[in-house]
Amino acid sequence: MIRFHGQTFWLYGAVDSQTNEILHASFYPTANNQTTRLSLTELYRRYQLNYVEFLIDDANYLRSVLAEGGYRF
Image (cartoon, rainbow, N blue to C red):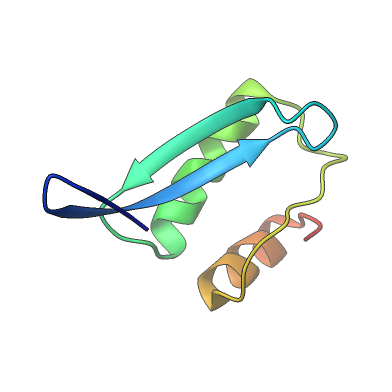
């Protein structure tokens, strides 16, 4: 979560674990299944996601959306 000018945003980010390069970042006013799907859709448009593994925290919405999409996490 990020607070900016009194507003709260959730950060979805993708980093190449070998180079530490930031590949993608999205900010949303809420974190839920829909925003997770939106972020994954943006990532999928830019990168081949077939062989990636996502590192996530314990948020249930992340697990359910990644499992639905068949992603490794």
